[in-house]
Image (cartoon, rainbow, N blue to C red):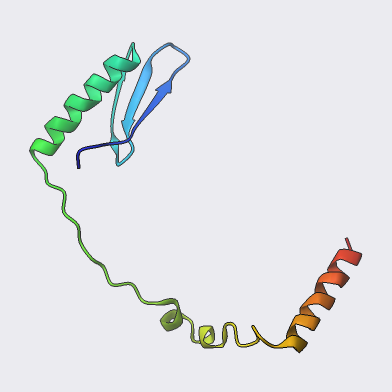
Length: 97
């Protein structure tokens, strides 16, 4: 990865805290923003010198496998009677507000 997102926060004591958003535990503080950026750049280089970034795939169960009721989702989408019922419910809710 060539570009990293750095959060710069100005503290009440005048210091700037720099945090690598992709690696939240990588953080440093300096008197200036530029100093904090340089420090965080060096810390990141040091950490990456001993590490590697890999991508992995993790299969995720689909929603329909988690909830058998999902097979019924949308069955009334084109039913005009159902649309009338929904309109009536919405009108009653608005009247009760």
